[in-house]
Image (cartoon, rainbow, N blue to C red; front, side, top):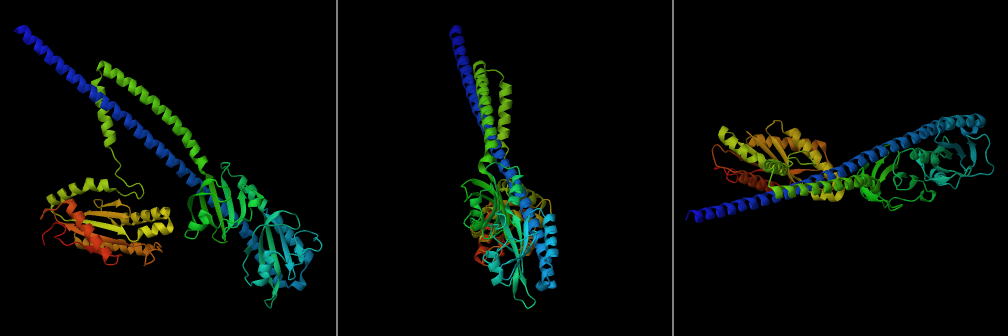
Length: 522
């Protein structure tokens, strides 16, 4: 009997031991799977972060390139503009019949020597004949009456400087950008044209000094899309139009500067472009980096990271095999499992676009705040806000402009909340939520009214809205947990219902939920 009982006990112990071993095997196996997934997720997040960082750096680079090239072009043209205005005033003031051509030629030559971008300075008579240039001798029998700029000034009384399309110089054969101005007799009749020409090659050499990738591009174009200069320089491209490009068709009409990912209409290369319109002249510059040049370094690092990750996973698998065979280092495994659990449990609580809290942050704070209000006996205000006609805004101005609008509105919300305990979150899409402890109905209305006033002062243009500007609708719900039983869900539902009521009343306003809908007896 004793021997049989001992055998049974040994069997039970063996079964129990096997059960513990199987349980431990399953725990270790689950742990290894979780750890490997955690490494894959973390490394995947890091690779994605590096991808976004690469594009962020590229955005900064093309923005700076566009700003530098725009300033360079504006300065170069302004110099010619100022010189031509001064010369035109002198010619018209002295009178064309009293023109001292040798003296004027010497003056033009000095001005050309001072400005390296100049190809030449020219004065043409009313019939298009060359009167004087910066050169000591005039080419015989040349007449520019057929030039586009000459025809324009002869037929228009516009006295402002005019930037023409690229032409080939009749004196040197160089490609030049004509910058012309109308000359008049004292009675207002057409007296001729004063012309300054800028060498296309001067811009080409300047653009060539920038360190960008081989498939990058720099473009100087007229506002109508006509190309004046482009890097890489191909003479047959000069004069082509970019009017149907993504920048000129869908972005430039709405914003004078911005960032665009598009396929070039000239060579079909996908690029990240920054564009900028000149403030004083009808010109636009584009700076573009090829998508391949942005992605290639990231791809190289990502491949190395994936290779390291695979080696790490193989190592972990081997380590797990040793653990499964020997059933050792249980404490280390439990600690690692706990660490992996904590890593997976840690979630972002901030909306990456606006910098406000996200919905998870609101869920984490709402219930504790209601309990605190119940203990301390103060009311809680919840406000739901929604930007009006925001889909129409995105459709009209693009998602980049929509994101910028959301960020600006989030800044207004943060400015309106004066107390540390107040919370502003992006609830989702174009919807935002304010949670304000120790705030009654009139107080919440004052906050909403202040936000409305600040938004109206900022005047964010919205061509898709009947009001022509960005507005919002709001719903306000007030709860008093100390006197009546309320829940975050009921308070949120009441605020949401009030929001829909405000939208139904015409938008650009707010409604306050009644006490019953918020969970408070009247």
